[in-house]
Image (tube, rainbow, N blue to C red; front, side):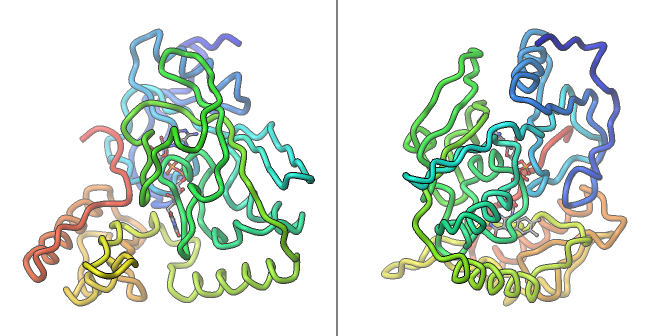
Length: 302
Ligand SMILES: Cc1cc2nc3c(=O)[nH]c(=O)nc-3n(C[C@H](O)[C@H](O)[C@H](O)COP(=O)(O)OP(=O)(O)OC[C@H]3O[C@@H](n4cnc5c(N)ncnc54)[C@H](O)[C@@H]3O)c2cc1C
């Protein structure tokens, strides 16, 4: 497949493609509806020496107000959907939503992913950041993945390749692209799976902003466990004690039901969000001597 610069869209607004609903345009934009076209778009950028960025569901990003330089490739690949019923393994294209895997597993009576109910974004994005909730993460179910290497080769790599850790993986630092992935599920009961999904949905609705409110989920990473404990400390509770829920900057403010959520009140800019995040970090450092680090990613021109 051949893609030329002339066939790329230019100056495409990104704010409707990211859950924070803010940020500037992509200088060049390409929507990849197949794995071949995704590979070709990245090859074009590499050949032209153009910076590129792979956009998944846009649910973990603060896109700069001045946009993203170079080529933004939107991963909308969905062609691979394979279930091996005997081994309870599911292989999917990386552009499919994590929620698609959750729904499919429920439909098939396979358990192990219902804890991910309500996490937005693509499977590729979920692998990149080792997304998870309720004590489980993508690292717990990923068997292997097809990855596009920086030299243009495509290789199947095992789970260990990703060096998963809390909300991170090796591909945060190295430009590998996940094309598809295979997951291990367990035997389950449809009704029990559905009950767990409903319970998690309810919990999320009670403490997260409604879908139409711009945000990118938890803004900061939870904190390492205290000595002798094994659970991470919620960044939200430290933020709440620091008075975060009363804080805002421009059109960005801290959500009143969850101090680790920054929300876009409608007209927030990326700069508003950054300034508020910096204020929160300074306050927590001053009050508790704790350095918060962002779970969301700032992307684009500074
Ligand atoms: C309301 C809300 C609730 C949330 N709750 C949770 C939660 O409970 N747990 C949790 O972990 N997260 C949560 N998040 C954050 C977010 O959903 C996850 O981080 C998600 O996995 C991001 O996936 P994405 O496709 O949207 O990635 P994007 O935001 O599009 O991109 C994030 C990064 O992943 C990279 N990337 C995307 N696809 C690929 C690929 N195929 N190959 C290589 N790199 C790729 C991008 O280049 C970018 O650097 C929440 C977000 C929101 C808005």
